[in-house]
Image (tube, rainbow, N blue to C red; front, side, top):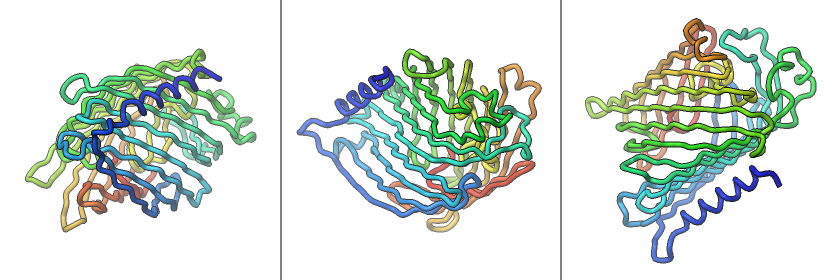
Length: 359
């Protein structure tokens, strides 16, 4: 058994040991299921089902945050299969915080190559299976500040043989498939009023991971991420939020673990993976405003670029997006929205119908 499997088992053990309450503790638990329909440029229309839970350790403890899990399966018109399992668990008095995912997807998608100036007409369709594990295990260090260990594992396989032989993929790390296993420290500052739909507060996450052959990775590389978000409400209803996201890699990075522009999270309007390289800087702003009962509106925009090396940012072209959207409140008590966004860029556009905010 490889070392990375031992790491995962140890993480699971520590989570279970910490989150299961004492017999004297009480848990407020809720479970539900929902059908789902969505649309993004990468998937076209998709259909699926969601099983979710909400629970809280210490039923009468007003300070403990609500935990939740989601198990989701979907199929898209692009013949893509997703199976996603996410969790966010807060133990009593918020002493420990565990979050992560266990995902599988069979995913045909466009590959534009690596770099900040790739061409749309040079894209190729690739297909593969990918299995992913993410586990962030944190302990409260000080007021709203958590520190811990971040473990990540990816395996990409069943790659299309014709694509592997293409000229574009000959020099692309991981084009024939890869395994990556990495671990490192993570710190989170979280003072949001509601993680599902923040209206005030701030969130900062920073992590450093080392991917090494000794812990099951096929290549050696390092990855640093800084995610900063700020939320402010004006005139009691107008929510103004911003996000700065920095992703820096060094070493032999598999192509699907490179920093990536596009999709429902980074510069909406670009195809997910439209630009990818070792490093990325993104700056985004968004304004949300409720207008009538469950209905709200949003406007957003952003700037960003990817680069092979950090000095290249000074000479690379800056990509931008802008757009508007609707917000439909699907659960008043949990304050969760269905997000319908239409993003535009200088050469593309995209419609996104998904749950939860972009940041």
